[in-house]
Length: 379
Image (cartoon, rainbow, N blue to C red):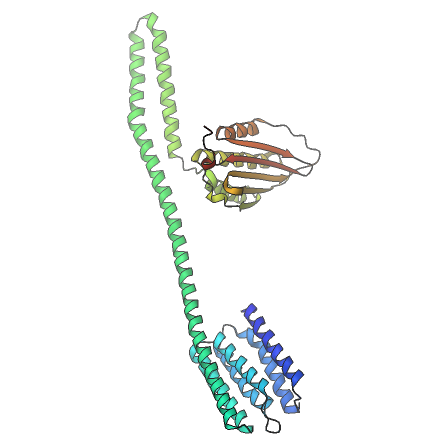
């Protein structure tokens, strides 16, 4: 509304300026008062954006005021009055519905008829004016039909787009739930089959150890220890299946939200160059998640500020790069610890690199991973 109103206001001011420049109008008290009211109505029109009845009234009053403003002097019709009439009808068609715009057009045509009757025009001039207003009304109403159809189509597209996004979000949630259910099912199967069998095997090893000869007890003890390790690893695998932790880029977003809510951190997260569309493998996504998690954890532990900037980008589609930046003090001593070393090793395992940039006023952790579809064989 604001932009379109400025457009209409600019056109109105331009037409009125040309009218004052080209015509010598006798500005008596009545015309000055009518023109003041006319311009006042132009400037108060935006106040009634959500009130079409008031807008209709304003346009009708402006149409009636044109009778007094453009009343012919010496029976001569001003052509600029026709332009003002056209603008009033065009604005009414643009802002109002079909019925209300027809009301304004009817009032404006009646006002125009009064002005024409007060002027001395030839038959050909009257025919020309009638033809002009007829074609103008037809063009404006046709534009209104096209504009309304376009508006309805746009609204329909927005509704469909919102429904598509809702269904896509629902599909992602259902997919995650199905994946988690499948993980739980696999975990239960491992627990019920492998876990129970390993437990039974431990009991048999213990029973055999009690009855075995002294020379065989050491070997049985080692076998029992190996079975216990296998059982513990099986239990850890089952626990990892039951975990609902999400890695990858989606996990980073959840991690940022969690830190902002629970740890009162202020994190500026930005995505550039189609980073979310980068073809990362699951292992690469999880390595990125762990690296960002470690970097943000270090900020919470060692930084004097609780502000950070996280950037994901995939320039050219050949690499994926992430950066974690936060402010650093000038006199702080830096030494790469176990967390950063583990982060570097994790990224190197998936074909990536890690850079640490420690400057006077900022600490930057940058990880770069070459994307799968670009890392072909060199044979």
